[in-house]
Length: 368
Image (cartoon, rainbow, N blue to C red; front, side, top):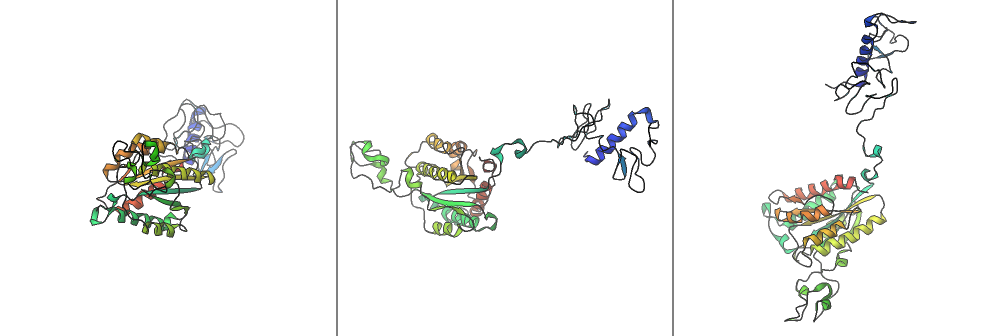
């Protein structure tokens, strides 16, 4: 049963009145029998007043200090909101207590329920000024695969992102975008004798062709190529048109260079966060599978995500159940697990919902 403060004070006043002199008249100037108008626990006088030291609350006369800290008695205190009967002390409740057991007799209301983040002085759970998302979107050839309704994954995902950035509820959010894989900014070596000759395009096929095998993928394995955004983080709705135009200028055709893409994204967002104090910044990887080129070792990729913390969190929006192998990367990035999107459901809506959920997640709300 829920008892509000005023009712609790009234009941406590009755309890105190019953425990003194076994119902005999009170002594002292202005005292009356307990049942008389104006006395403790009785109705107020017609003019809305009570006897000395009593206050009229809800047309009942109560002692304003009786529940504030504590009239003690063998019967114990009365339960407050959601509370149970306390020991010797005042009125207690789970959402806050008023003079619970051990309070000072006749003291004031302590009113201390479960503390929120600000009252704990925990700066890590202070809502940041702005949420900034940096989308790293896979443009691998498999994004041409058809999903629910016969629509390609690429078309459905880009439609979902477009809807998100154009939604009026996204106003004020920050967002930027880049894609993976990307072409290398430095041409592959013509020939090689050892792996070192290939740089990031290795290994070298030194036993036969003497070419860098990484060159055949056609995609960059260099993190710095992914550290420059296609559209830098800006605030919606201003940056929205740039995001939409960027999506229209790309198409799926590459392999999956997830490792350098995440490495470059972490580099960019950490630098951005340091220049925008008070913002909560996150990388949002949108992909349909595990990496297929460059570094494919998932523990090494998880270490890249961990390197972003505590400044940058890494979320992974996975298209289909095969992306669950990336759970360890998401966990290392501070976000628990892949946000798997069922491709048998309307994909544009699911992508929009996933981005909205990320923008309001506890991981970002409690970011430093």
